[in-house]
Length: 447
Image (tube, rainbow, N blue to C red; front, side, top):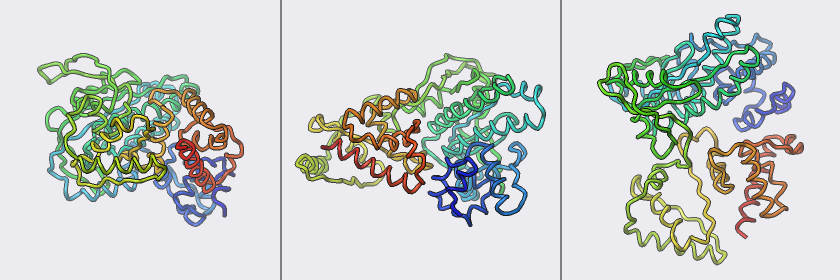
């Protein structure tokens, strides 16, 4: 059986590439479960139910039911790769003090949904919203510690350790807000209820007491950590994210904030500074964040700079070079590269930078997408129309002969593609066209 054709026959052809890249053939297809579909990134509750029913039809069985989120233990809704890492830490974490970022999110308008809607339908709406929140948390390797009826409590930095836990929590909070917009629009259209999410974030210390085999965790807060995160959620206006100064300081350089002044918090003798999270900056590494604030003078590394300069001279003569900088963490590899690419001798060169960050491991194309955004000068605040205009103008001004690669670039940047022929390609063909298109673009730019 052709899995791609089977998906298209059920109006689910948009998942063909995901199934192909994960080697899901007809035999594997019949074994897929709810958890497997979530791990594949199928966020839509309706699409998962449709797939489960179709798969059950192949097996001649009743479709597997989606568990109610609020009643399910964490092992049910935690992606398999994260669950394995949490269980690996089972014997290491109990009693350990960890510095983490706590995120609280809840649905504003849930009471109106419950009052004016059939209980079963209301439960489905709230479960769908909770899953949207969970998916965003899991994307940045956070852990949903509790499901609170119409909201969640999540932790970043424990039990899976990340030094950038504050930035990850901010990225997840913004992802929740983006993902909730279409769902909120649908609820408003069908039920006439305005639904939004308010989120609070705070960073501080916790102690892990135990992790159960079902991933349930018992945390003790040292100081007002959890209380402050919950308080920030209560202070946040619908559709916004409120942070404490502790989180703002840790995420400085990675996110854009708007100061909201000092607010009193019950249990604390002094008011605390709070901020609204507005968006993200272009910085993805600590070096990039530090560059925005100014860096110390660069000293030494003459031999290494000389080697890079020689490679640059050969490339200028038409003899392309690839240079790998290898060294222990913290020795200054990123700073050396930063200094070289911004030196006087590189002023007339087009420098395209891309990085691979741990929070982007869900997509193998993430570094390529990052490079394309740099090349097309796409800023985080650009809307889809402006992004598409930048792509079209840049490519067609460079060479009209590159017009055939437009579907490739637009698809990578998650922009609408109007090419009917591109829509008919199967995943392997799209992958090859993508690789060929990227090569053609970079070769033409280098001429």
